Figure: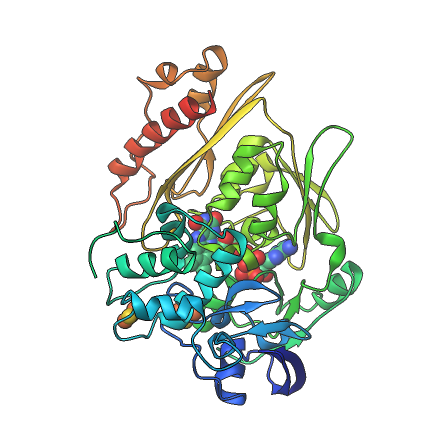
Length: 161
Length: 262
Ligand SMILES: Cc1cc2nc3c(=O)[nH]c(=O)nc-3n(C[C@H](O)[C@H](O)[C@H](O)COP(=O)(O)OP(=O)(O)OC[C@H]3O[C@@H](n4cnc5c(N)ncnc54)[C@H](O)[C@@H]3O)c2cc1C
Ligand code: FES
Ligand code: FES
């Protein structure tokens, strides 16, 4: 076992891990942050997306030891300081961007990374960016709509609720 | 996943040293290796993380005008960092998805030589040089078939040097589930001729389509390759496409790449 330490959602976190311990296992099992989901074994679904030093990565495809010293942000760190939903989360609720909610943490983290780099993405850019996030419920339409709304764009002309 | 030792060297020398035991493996971005470990298709005794090896990261230009990309440079860094070679930047920007691009590296991709990977096509069509801790390998001598390369055990890709063509383009027909290339064609036009490299199609891995290269070298237009085709024999056949379909796509993607390169 090796000691690992990082900052998770602004707070110092440390623990003992094996070389093979994935970041997502450290987050869920050591820190109890179960908002980050695991939906596949093949690095393809994106349910596990978190930010490491500001970049979106699949927490199931990075070892915890590779995040040594990093700033990690998970879905638990996304709400506003007063506990209310942040603008992206609220938009997912307002526009029915989720059904079962399993993919949602990854969707929100990917969306946040997109908006940080491209504050007013087009519909095409949003769909392109979410290529690695799979949702088996919504058909994506309302997810795209929610992200457009979260970026302050008019979505009244986009059909379907 | 089987257990292994995990080491994090801080320099290339330390990494080379750590890779000495036969059962040791390098870890780049882990975007191929970690899924492979999960499936227990690999069981290294030791993983040597290249993350802390700063010397093999970053992008620069050499005095021959080549773009030199460190082996540990991520796809996202290449996408944003080679404005003078737009076809290469676009290829990197379209590998997998954003999270894969934030971790996966050019060295890992070329070391792995997946028959459907994108970078092998760019390296071969550009006539790139693969630089390791011990030597320089021309792309023409580097790819040795599906998942096979000229790399020796423990050899680390430190840099890849790309000559910049006058015009180039990469066309990828995406396999929508994996987002790898079902067929991808990279066309690069240099002063002394055109090079065409095809990925995703052949059971032998990436290859140069020399017939198309000759036709395009005398007339760089989609019409020049209109009548040409590759034989279906030796093409990959799987649930995503038959050998005949892939052979057909090679022609289509080549024409599209030439048209887009202009
Ligand atoms: C969902 C998904 C979609 C993808 N889509 C595409 C795609 O469209 N096109 C595409 O080309 N690829 C795709 N990939 C693969 C991706 O590009 C990987 O990043 C790449 O194949 C491996 O790079 P890595 O740095 O992650 O290497 P790793 O996974 O860390 O290692 C792969 C192999 O290379 C060795 N290695 C790593 N670095 C070096 C080095 N510097 N020198 C020598 N050996 C080294 C390792 O020992 C290992 O054998 C996809 C991956 C995923 C998960
Ligand atoms: S759990 Fe599916 S990509 Fe990470
Ligand atoms: S809401 Fe169920 S998987 Fe996306």
